Length: 69
Image (cartoon, rainbow, N blue to C red; front, side, top):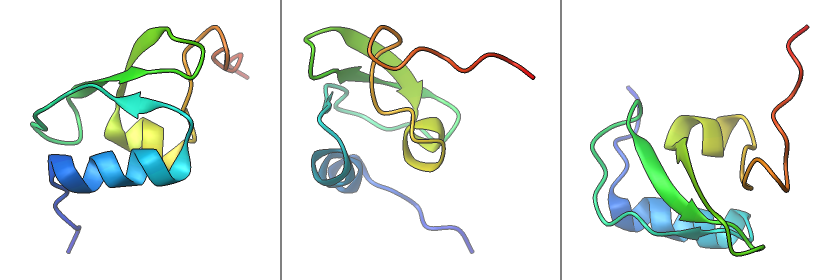
């Protein structure tokens, strides 16, 4: 069974695993986007699944999206 994350657990994960900061205060599920602040100061939105599993932990300027193959 998959772990159900709380906003507090997500915030700790973000602090421990990236230079970004979590700005969202509520978590509605893995398919909803959360608001983050990148180390460069830009705000960006990603789902927690992409942030956690796909290492998309910076804004699109600092970490441009990969080109589709």
